[in-house]
Image (cartoon, rainbow, N blue to C red; front, side, top):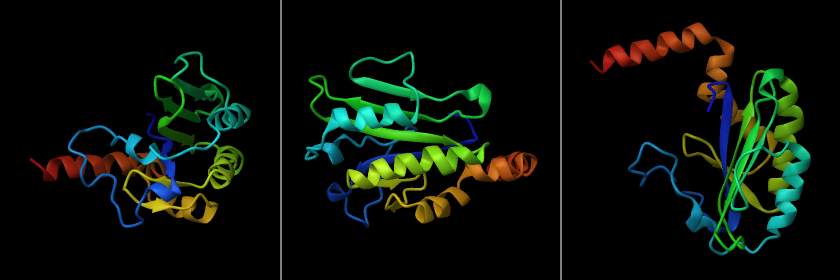
Length: 171
């Protein structure tokens, strides 16, 4: 993941308690598993995949159960998405996407399109701080403004100085 990418995890709205912190019980250095949130989802998976195909180009890697999309990083459109399916391709195990913050059109076009897909399918979003919110631009912008990706975009030197200061405080 590039530092200028803002990552959001997608889960069905009816599968999550609004007070639940997805990161609270995660004991690894990786993103927490979300497959349990998808157990009762019975939405139209081919339609979701098809709609994502219209938003971000399909990547040239992955397979039938690990589906990836990747934008043009050379054009500051390093947006991507990933949907992991069960082996029988009947259930989603994971869905996440990242938006490249270096270009405003990634927010106004790509993020807005994915938010629309999420609204249509009654999904909610979870940011890297564990905040859960509806797929609406106002909530996404609040989360985005507090993200490390935005801090980097706003002032890369200050971002790295802050990292160095935090590192020195832990010594």
